[in-house]
Every structure is written in C-alpha cells, then in structure tokens.
Image (cartoon, rainbow, N blue to C red; front, side, top):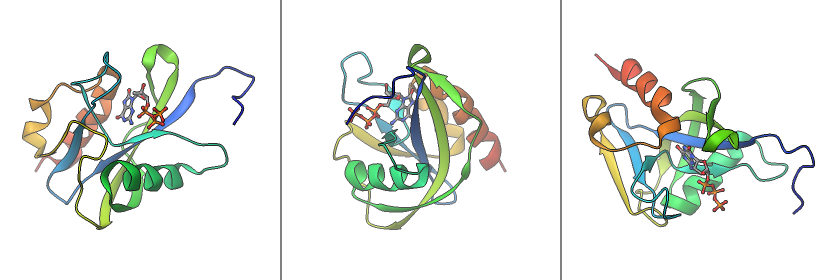
Length: 136
Ligand SMILES: Nc1nc2c([nH]c(=O)n2[C@H]2C[C@H](O)[C@@H](COP(=O)(O)OP(=O)(O)OP(=O)(O)O)O2)c(=O)[nH]1
C-alpha cells in the first residue's frame, strides 16, 4: 500500500475501553524505545478504513475482543514528535475477555490508579480527561 504524498501526520486511534468503573491500559512490548510505556489499544488507520473500523480491528487483533466504539475522549493529540495525531475514543467490550496478544501486560485501572503506570507522554491529556470523567 502506498504512503500519502503529503507527509502530514498519520492518524492513530486508541480505545479507552471501560467497564463503567475501570479503564483498560496496555503496556507496549515494542519497539524498544516505547517498551514499558502504557497506552490505549489501537494503532494506525489503514487506507479506506473509518476510525471506528480501525478501533474494532485493532481491539480484535491485539486483545481478541469485539468492542462498541463510543465518543471521543479529547481532541487530537500530537504524538511521536509530530508524526502522529492520536484520537482516543471510549469503547466497551461487546464480547470476549481481553488477552495481551501483542502487549506485555494489560491492567484494569480505577480512576484513582490511572497514574500508577507510565503512559506514553502524548497520552497525558486523554488520561486526565478520563480521570475527570470517571471521578465521582
Ligand atoms: N496504539 C497506540 N499508539 C499510541 C498511543 N499513544 C501514542 O503516542 N501512540 C503512538 C505509538 C506509536 O508510535 C503510534 C502507533 O503505533 P502502533 O504501533 O500502535 O500502530 P500499529 O498497531 O498500526 O502498528 P504497526 O503495524 O505500524 O507496527 O502511535 C496509544 O494510546 N495507543
């Protein structure tokens, strides 16, 4: 598949999967410079794919679950030194039990424990927004 000629940032979608209380965080296993940092399951949009389709595909591939995609958590977040635009959506599991097929570890985090893992730096505003949204 060819790359777009205008070398603008690529859209990356992330799923803030929640069960009404906790958020599913995932520890990256690769590449070495990102391994050990935590993220929302997701990845780059493939050509012709909608953001919801990309999220459903990535959650199936990475976690083995089907998700229903909800609303956006925040506006676009620039990550990867400006190479990516991260768009995080709320999501809920429709079927399956999440397993770390590509990640080093998965953890359900309550809002007060969201800071217990080192997030990818670009994810901070989304993590903050989730904490506020879930705070009682
Ligand atoms: N999946 C994901 N990527 C994120 C998040 N935050 C963040 O800065 N990124 C960055 C890390 C990566 O450089 C890039 C997405 O790459 P990725 O490796 O997840 O994408 P992909 O699944 O399509 O991977 P690949 O096939 O290209 O290896 O976006 C996040 O919350 N989730």
